Image (tube, rainbow over all chains, first blue to last red; front, side, top):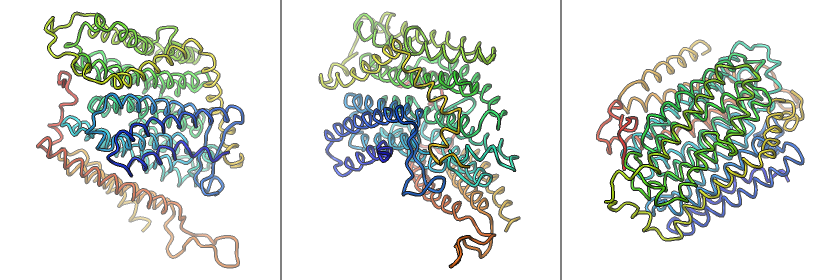
Length: 506
Length: 121
């Protein structure tokens, strides 16, 4: 039964290999992409079910007992993240059918998406720090290629910044892994969680923790390490931007949660949690201030990613069970809403011919239903009840109030207002105001109307699916909260995790 | 070796950081490569530097005699070198292509994606 754990890695890998065997069969690539992500969704549902009924599952690769071999672990957090990655993988596979052109598909677009998913799932599954490094690299190399797939000048420029900073982060990661191994003699996360409190020489513990924080901070795009994100995320094709926005930074956040709850606890490294608190406040504020100034849809949304990461980091900094649960809810809500907004902006570009809000207008008059579809994730992001964002934000802020972090809570509330402001800005500019080009619409919307009806459905279906999820998870909020609560209890009590993996002995 | 290696690692880090701060793209690549080497060497020293003491259990015994070199960091480095090699090959190709497309290798001239009003259609 435990062997099923490896499937979230194997399925996309096998799919990519099959696709590469038939490099010219584009139609087959599309079908395989959807089938593979559907299978992934089923697998993660099964995993979620068995973790909820039977506790944490683990798999020792090659039969080497932990902590000597490589361990794959599925706890509730991993399950939640796997479910989200399969969901975003599935919707992106569908959306790509409608939006990605054939030239890119011939340049191995679909296999690359599968390999990206493999890296992301591997990072969520692994219970070994060096193995996490390997999965990060798998994920990065696929994302590098996806970023420059169209070969436009601005993509190369964005890629230079993205690649350089991420390679730097990998080098820091390696150094941190080295020092940690020198101190603890193990890289197995469960084993580390047991051993770190017993260490004799703990002088370097804070240093290692800060090195890990910098590494994952670069990947998660927190202040002041986020500059690669707004410089590169708006350059690739919009389907690629969407999957990056939904999943890549969240892998960094996942690593921060995993490391700074289970491995480096509040007691062992209090300094880190103080840093995290300040970082989170600055991340929230700088991200949203960047967004408010933008008129390019994709850049505006890219800056919002940063701002939202701040809320998740804030939750980790507080460290109470309620805060961690709130942070997880925030991740789930944000992955769905953010990816959805990127999909929607891709459609706005197709029907209006521009990314620039100043040149778009009057969409509500022509496409009223589309306007409603846009409002769902936009209002959810701003935190309007009863959508998913409201509950997530409420939980995080309530945890902040309980921890008496007044300043950071104040920043969070203010940032929330500015988020609403920038969403209203998109709404006013793109949907409500008159089209700045007047009656002479020229060839506006030609690109959209030229698409076959199948492609149109492929564009709209993911938006509808994610929008429904945002509404449903807002109305039936309780089961989600129970799930997140369970995950946060597992994270904060490292002995549960360790017992499941190593049997509890240090 | 115990004195020499830390000094070399420190020098490599210094050189790497100096190089990635340069404006020339080629120097940045060299900087990234050197930083990778510095990290690898650091992991190597973590496994204890013992000469002529491989981590084999002698025949007839069940335990290994101290001191021995921990083989795990060496396995980690091998993996890291292989991954680093692949990534560096891609990076060099990417930088070359960028240089051809943008007709410049000065990183200070690559500001287009950061500017506020530089919006493509």
